[in-house]
Image 1: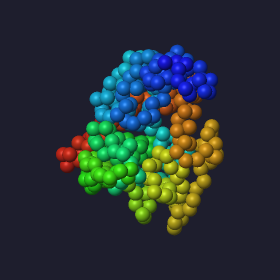
Image 2: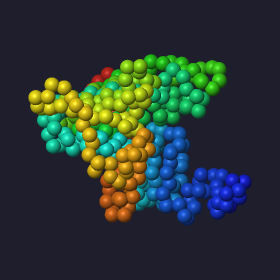
Image 3: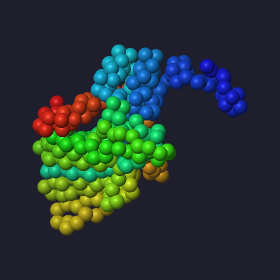
Image 4: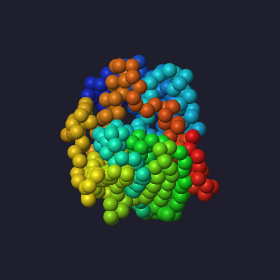
Length: 327
């Protein structure tokens, strides 16, 4: 209830809450940000939408496509603005690469390959992360790390025409780091997606659970006249949160050299804000501009539902062993 609690009294906070729903429906709240475990996304976002609030929800939209479809329908019925946290397309380097491709830096795109590590889904985790090893919770290497990376691939190079996939459960049991014992895993921690873009370019994306000693993020784009490479050091291969280095070469170049991303791609978020916060800040800035100017540049819940359908198509391709048409 508002105004209760020792912390509120201690710090003079005029409104304090012990239930998220009470906070969400408070009349002073305009935007509800849902950034919690995936199994709680649907419940909290539903309360916000039913209260007529704008909602920014981290990806994925729900634990499954049925939940995503319900939230997209609620958002449309409520007539409120929504944002899905697919921030990879707002990365300054990703946006710059998109423009370089459009300007013909590599010529006609022939193929792209991306290899990354999800960091989570390794051999051991704290108990608080155990839910990520249950496919029903909806936070898997496919739905999380791989879909974030595919958002960047599709943002730069266009949508899939068709996909094949191989989803493999490599680790059957996971050790808990904050106590003895193991848990069973039913998620595929090795994700292979190959396909063809609508442009005709070939795509190969592989994501591993955990990390590799040999490198955890490398994205290469090859064309008739040049090549571009995005990479990042360290154990984390989650593309959407990385400060990636860009290299390129074309024409008579015999190797690649580093390319600096122009300052304009960082506006209005400064270069000095590094790490995972930068791309999220870019999403907030774009959303604020949309609200002020009446534009629509950020992906909403309807867009998120389409990405859920793509994840389902990838899963179906693996389960059937048959290439799937992407619609």
